[in-house]
Length: 324
Image (spheres, rainbow, N blue to C red):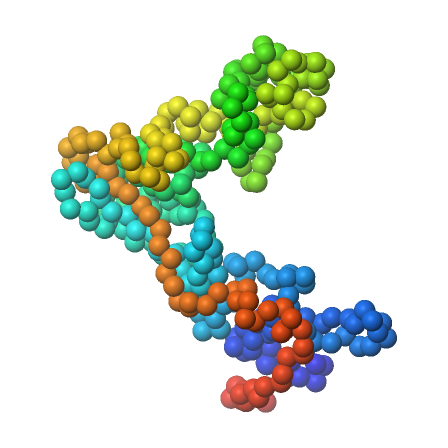
């Protein structure tokens, strides 16, 4: 196909291009380290050579939008289906919207489309119950600002060691003066710098404290394991929206256990004329196309894939009628 004398039209056949991509993501040329003079050999691609991300990986030549995904302990090849339903107490649940996406798309990236679809149907809720995957500081602010929706769900997990250590100082224990861009720590010391920055495509503030103050502070063991403390809160609207204006009514453990009843599930006021349902809930379900997964199961181990792939007969592709 890539040979100088190969017909140029062959590279333009969609099925051939898909086959080329499948071969690239499945096989690779490897040199024999024991015999440097030996020509490279075609081998199965392994984790050592790397695989393309799931958004680019072709899982089926018959449907290029089908991709591999993993959500906690569930893996599948297919799509994601986001179901939104009413959840009024004393009323039967009714599905109000179904949103289908490719499997690797993050749940929170779908919420804006769900709200736009509900708005077009005049079905926007006053409160929207969602799982942790939909909760994000951006979404908390945008849902309230653009649609007047209170987003309710389990609070995102704080993975900092301070949040897991009793007596340690988390971000909430620092006083933030947004007007003057000064932060005050629990020991009463003020920040040295306050700079706008990006963290994983999210706008954050990088707030640093004085190296001199932190190293001599008697509370340092409760605050930081580095030479000085660094805070990275989101922008003011997002930070205050996630911690104050939009209330996450339950802790992460109680949300999963279902032992407590959130305030959003208490009897809600009767919907106004412009709001058909006062409450709605959205959840995601994997839509399985294939039961197998990639990378391959242990039965197809790396040891059994070190040999050269066997050649197979290929269907004949006739040139288009317009070709000379």
